[in-house]
Image 1: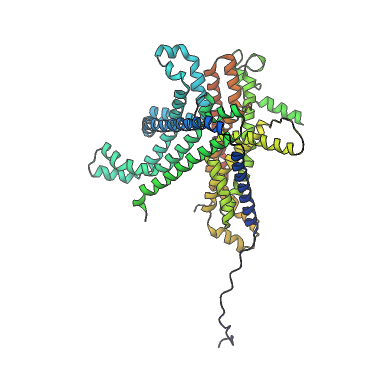
Image 2: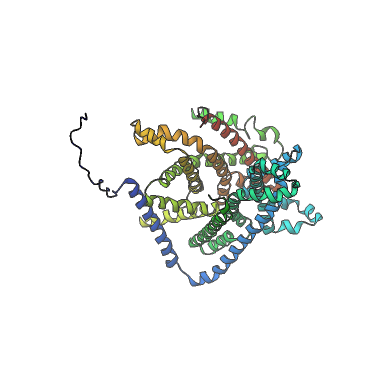
Length: 276
Length: 260
């Protein structure tokens, strides 16, 4: 026998409570308002301080600087990728000496600031001028652009070598063994089986590395290369107009965001066979 | 008391103390301590670099934690607001952020003072500007690390806290934070090493850090390669010491971890 004598009649579900003004929402609105205020101030600054002469004078220089930045980073990433191959293989080799040298190289370049490396190459090697002239390399180390490129290549090669090594080592052993069982030679197995799988793993870190390089490339402005940052500093030193930095910020943000979105698209496209 | 501590620090100074590297091996060379060489100037630069990084760390971590909390809240507007923050400061070059903060703060303070009727030129402290810029960059990266650590903690942990009748903040402090630290520590260790390297940018706005001091020495003595090489070695040593210390902290944080 049930103790319950009568059942509660069916009722509609409770009404959804109207979203109240929580603390989180207030903070969110406040911060957004702050951003909006900053954006308005920015636009106001640009409109209020608009100067056709300045624009005509420094606009083309900015575009020129943009091109210098992009070409510098593009070349550095490509040459760095080439240089990173032997380093990554030395790092994976069983030979103690090669492994040690590659490890020292990677450790050295990853744990010192890019700015210090650039100074070491540009100013430091500059003190060996007679020797460099004797070898016939002075034209290379005299030019700030070449020195910037050189230090970027050395720096990014260390990072890319680690990315490549991590990616190649992430390919399961069974893949090598399967290739060997099929009678494929080592080089073909590497090129056709290991590398394609490794590069997919490496795609995202490579994208991050390019973005980091793009941001790091601003340091060449300090050794008198007129890249985007260098042109900005030039324009600021001439006009003392704070806008110059804001324009640079817009350019850099645009580049980095474009890169990020292109990379996200590439990744989605290249890994579509892995989707379940 | 403070005299005692400063005496202790002087005695234990690894570069220019009684048993310092420069005092033992550098006497008579360019890196001798005192008036004869650049040893004590460079040692001062090392102190500035370390104190800048150490001063930035807690601020960056605190802001990063708040941003990570906001980024996983249910409130869309809040997520949008912090999304803008991280996108901007992860996208800008650190050097540009530094300039924007340095000159921007200067203009801001100047115009605010002009509002009150003060019309003088003011120069803000390079250390503070560097600290603000580095903290902003560090916080936007660390928020990303902490956000992914938050996501790695199962929902059941929060529910368990609720069912034990703990207040939301006590759940955070007693249950979530200890696990968060363990998960986020490797990522934060990487960010610390990055921060140590990023401090080199403040030399551009005139703060006397390692790179600036060695740069001055290089220009005066015309031994650029030697001094910049020393700068690189010092950064290398700092990185090695920190990775050693961080390894210790990581082992300590993991000592009572449950295998899952």
